[in-house]
Image (cartoon, rainbow, N blue to C red; front, side):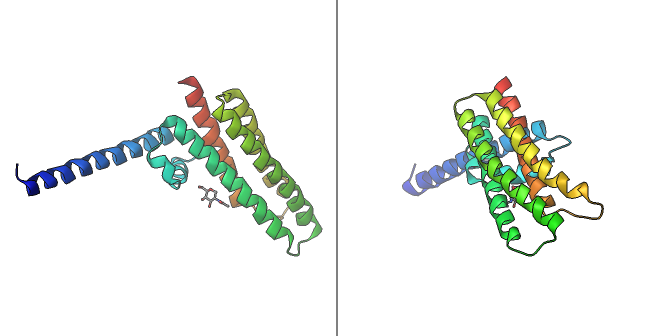
Length: 180
Ligand SMILES: *[C@@H]1O[C@H](CO)[C@@H](O)[C@H](O)[C@H]1NC(C)=O
């Protein structure tokens, strides 16, 4: 084979390998999201969330579980700081009291998510599930307390919804991983 042809075939071969790796990686995200989506977690949310982390391109199922938990950690951490920012504004008493509660709920949620990541690394899956349920309850509690007064609305509906969906993502993935 002459040198140019040889180089060409090498380039072709390696791009085929890369292409294959890329589509295999995408398949596992698609497959996993099909398995874990439910009433509490949309398929589209799952795919978008997981693909937003570049590590998902090369991760296996267990790696994707960690990707999901890390996403949750970043999410509840930034929502925690967002609530802090909101508290600097002027609110009526009803909203202010609830925002302060949410602020506490989210600082705990950050700690609980970190515990869940440690438990995940140690393959203590029932512990992961306990910690994640607590995160889910925190977001749910934050959201529902705004409904205590007719006409009041939560300034955190999107953030609580994201935390609940990411929590459900973690929980459902752990259920598959623990059972496989
Ligand atoms: C939380 O995660 C969702 C899904 O990945 C994303 O759309 C949203 O921007 C994140 N929110 C924050 C505050 O990071």
